[in-house]
Image 1 (cartoon, rainbow, N blue to C red):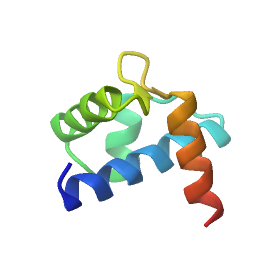
Image 2 (image 1 turned 90 degrees about the vertical axis):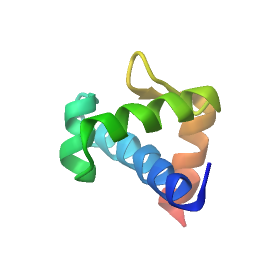
Image 3 (image 1 turned 120 degrees about the vertical axis):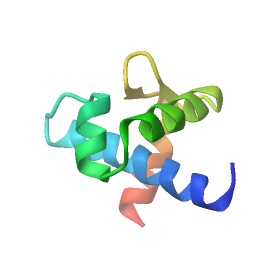
Length: 76
């Protein structure tokens, strides 16, 4: 991932974590709203993060590996 992609990907991971903490169902539309990023871009990021094992793109949720990373970023 390029630097901008990486930053957006990390923001997406953190947002999925925050949605879970707020008990808000995660969806592409929720991510579009929270991140203020177009839906095609959110889909692209989800696909890339899924390929890295950080999210389950089909279910729009963090994997265990993604959760560990999101929690570590949240505490930093």
